[in-house]
Length: 272
Image (cartoon, rainbow, N blue to C red):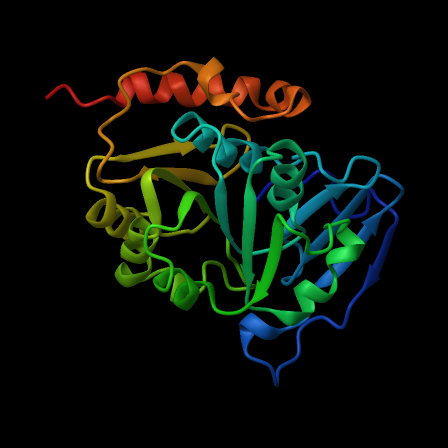
């Protein structure tokens, strides 16, 4: 449900699958995922047949391999050099690993509701908890309500086999995401849903004009960026500013994303 982009068509990869898969006795959010190795190159995690939640390059586990995950980090253009990052949804940990490696001054808090996903963190080379990283088993919708003004950067990418969970698709959740941002903070949310309009309507009620929707060129995903009410529409769009606090390699990886987000901000800037 998380993305509609397929690297190989079915049958073109040698697949080794582990995990128990769906269990009709479990709530959807608690069902064990499947881990699939596609040869020596890729490792995937997913819930529904034929749909991948997360994908990792086995020889470069902290690289943002799936395009929309890079686009979401374009939020650094709105809030450079974040010191506290919140992430809703662990999955294969793509953004967790990237932030842990390339934003060395940031502390990262991740909330994941499914214990089976957390149990697979080492298979996806997600670092153990340390002074900068904490993975919390819990309901992201409830957790974010308890964190007013806490995060410089908030990344929302929580999915189950049916798509965006109901708890992450309410007005109260989007309001809580806005409230969880520190002054000058920014949020990026991955939207992969057949009915996009209701999600956008809720985001607009929460963020007002401080909202940018950016389609992912090679995927069906769209990324919504929102920022704190105390921050007006950005007056400047300098990609070099977004590289503050990012490692040199990480900045190179996101260069094209920063340019694309900056262009979109310029094009959609309010005229009032």
